[in-house]
Image (spheres, rainbow, N blue to C red):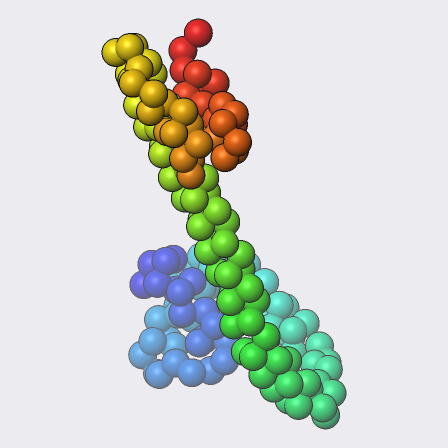
Length: 151
């Protein structure tokens, strides 16, 4: 036996779980190998220290507390997800509405500038008062392509 195989079986050796031949081979190796003897002694001390530790008993109502906590989390989590999903949906909807209005306003402003460049035919005032072009009283558009174009 070599050191690696002996050290991998030390716990079984100390717990007296090895058969006759393997037990004799382990003893023979440790009689000549100081490193494996030290490893076995260290493991023996560790096992005796761990064996003397008192393990505390859990409280009697631990099971009920854990079950109640799991049930509470199970039924509260989906509500939080629904709230977040509704807020995200509202935000996405608002952003898409704003983008649509900007694109439509840009198109109306572009149409008006092309109409004015061709000499105008009296329809520019109607287009400005349209649903996306002005305030309905003949005033200029609130959002205009001129505000967003290159300078």
